[in-house]
Length: 351
Ligand SMILES: Cc1cc2nc3c(=O)[nH]c(=O)nc-3n(C[C@H](O)[C@H](O)[C@H](O)COP(=O)(O)OP(=O)(O)OC[C@H]3O[C@@H](n4cnc5c(N)ncnc54)[C@H](O)[C@@H]3O)c2cc1C
Image (cartoon, rainbow, N blue to C red; front, side, top):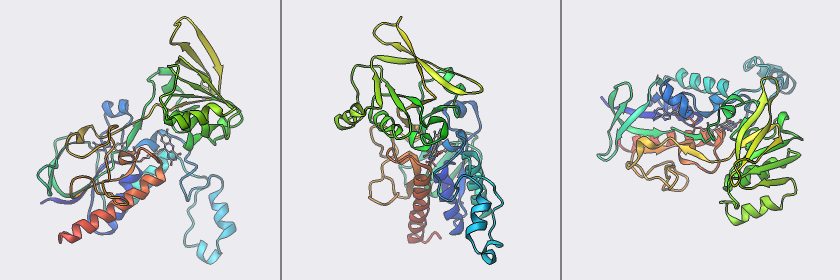
């Protein structure tokens, strides 16, 4: 018998879709990805991008600080005694993801720790699906929530200092204490490097943008805004040679190397390193099956709906969003995709 709804992916989008689908009695199954070396290297182990970070300071509902204290002070005791979460802090990425996963399971979501590797979408619903571990089954509706992976240069020293001054998300991490009032470095020359660099000047004393060419790839307006910012200094024709630091302090600097004169290096003292060289959406297994943009992100053809180009297949989260790329927006479209899928199934008498 075919599954009613299969959710592929295990970030905020996938778990939120599962919570809504399970509460609508759709008995969803989530393929959360496989724990294997291939996924570790690609940064796509189960629980998504947030499982690779530490504090999440901007997910609504989890203020850092004494959460129990905030609630004690603000909520009437009669109500409070029925609702106290006994936590003393905000939330970290891995905790948030474990809690979302548990919440989905509490409502009856089945979770399979495996990758989906093949779909037959051309012949319509119910769709044929294959997993890496050899599962073969059919599903009436599918939600794709496979997310994206931040691109890094691939240096060993980048890997060593992740969460200790190396980041790929200025909006997520820029306000943290280690980056405030210090010099920072951003790598890249496209719109995201301009955006991240300009954003970081709100907190940093200085922002270096390191770019391997003599001009930016970014749109003229974004580049001009960055270049006009007195806190930004561009290091043209330069590559990052190495991220410098130690286990106690994390990142303390970077060594850059000229792309014109390879013998010429310079060290910049910085407390943070932001890679802004794009993301890769996890859509390679969908090539030729669903419409994508030139970067490989899935397309939502109808405004404010999560339908894809194939009837019965929905997309949620970063896999279809190369603009906002936040946990809360991924959770938002995860919710929307479950509601869209439920209505689609109901219209066919499948709920
Ligand atoms: C270092 C870092 C820090 C961040 N910090 C914050 C923050 O503080 N606040 C914030 O709002 N956002 C933050 N973000 C961004 C946020 O993590 C993403 O916007 C969000 O996780 C996207 O969620 P998603 O559900 O779309 O997919 P993802 O989180 O990308 O998860 C998708 C997962 O699905 C699984 N998957 C992929 N392909 C398959 C397949 N074929 N079969 C089965 N499973 C598959 C993989 O496990 C993959 O990781 C951060 C990102 C990074 C990289």
